[in-house]
Amino acid sequence: MARPLRDSDPGLFHITVNAIEPGAYFFDGVDKMIWRATLARTIVRVRAEWTIVAHCEMTTHAHLIVAVADGSLSAGMHLLGGEYTRAFNHRHGRKGPLQQRRFGAVRIVTAAHLANAFRYVVRNPVEAGACRSPLDWPDSSYRAALGLEDDGGLTDASAVIHHFGHNRARALTELRLFVELPAAARAA
Image (cartoon, rainbow, N blue to C red; front, side, top):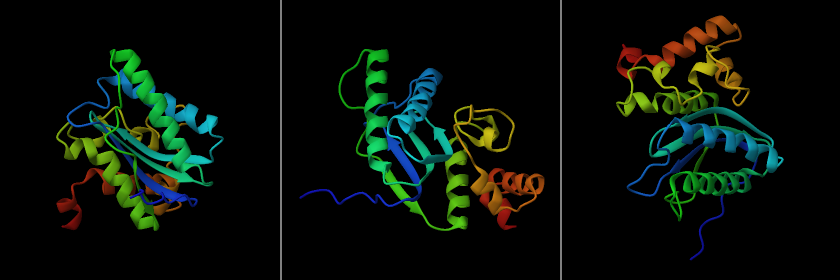
């Protein structure tokens, strides 16, 4: 039986890619830089109309939140996965597939869903016990979203920031509270 067709309509998506179990999708920071550079090149090569809202690279998987204005999500992710696998295999002297299965894609339909997906993506290292704060994780777009570092224009988190208000300074404060406080502290 054939796989169901991927949602290819324009929209906003939370994308995940996972390594073959058990295994690493990234061995080190260099792999993560190669993946981000491959992502940027992929967007250009597919002539895709993508806006990367957020990204986070972990050891075994990666997350993206991407706004796709055309029908290029599948083609772009296929190219990204193939190019990154070839680079990873060459660098580490291995052969064969790297991804466990095709990428996962969940359509984001509301501003609240986007805010929650953003929080999930950038808090992923905290929840995995890899760091204490999303600010401590060097392999995500969180610091760039807050204006604390330059990611070379790879990401544009303005849609998330605007969810928290039109005054940028106040919106960034609210975003930080939303992301950095654990769920129990926000509920109190």
